[in-house]
Length: 346
Image (cartoon, rainbow, N blue to C red; front, side, top):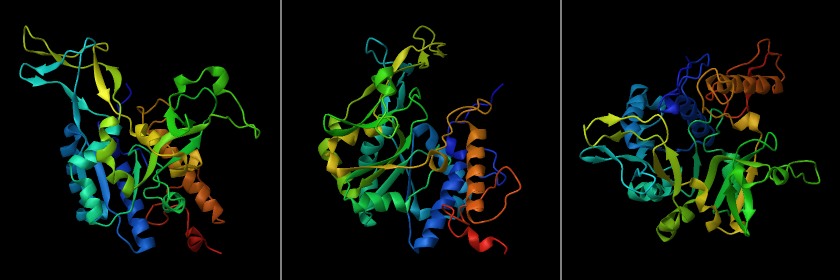
């Protein structure tokens, strides 16, 4: 049987020669940037109540991967009640409501309620980079992306990759009613999804990869707009308490509703001139861990292969010959392929 992805993708060993987890890779990218910039980069990690203890324990066991513990800050996203299809509250046991995390859009309220924004202002932080931990190729605190957004005085910016094809099921970054927005693939009919521009590229081809920039000024305005963000319905299988026996029942099909907020629901809050979109190459910056090993797409093997293939490209660009199918380049050696020519023998 296929091994399931663990509850916390960041703790997962995707099979690299180094055996590093995604968290470890990302920590090393932060260390590399700190060395390049002679600066300090705080890392804020949003967990949920069920994953908080396990995540912190993982960091403690690995000595925070060489980072200063004072610069690694954990905080919890919120929880919302689970509901039946007719809007009744589901019980987890006779004395407790069934709760579920409030989605990645819960980030904004969590920044407020956990004192994270205050901590950021105390540290004089001006620019914030937010990403999903399951992206094996993510360039944490990418100076090119942050510099691009800051140079345009953007309140909000996003990285995108080009859609593989018209049928790929991904959210798309668009202009909607004169405002930036993300729409789901299902909102486009096949004919519209297949439209091409004058260069032969998909007209609706900017795929959302949940990789965003925020100015601290925009985030500090959250109390003004936090309660305007919508909640979305997700039909899920939710364990529930059988009132006659008190036992917990695990349903075989969706039986209830989880309420979620989406991180991109803030996009329409800014004007187009306050928004920036930064397209990057998928093979260099986007390899998500979504599926169990052996599925052949967005799984541990594809994440590993994408990192090794990137390393090979970097080494070859430095004018070296690679005799294997791939190379793992430690982020401590190179953040984004720079400096490798110093290790090539003449």
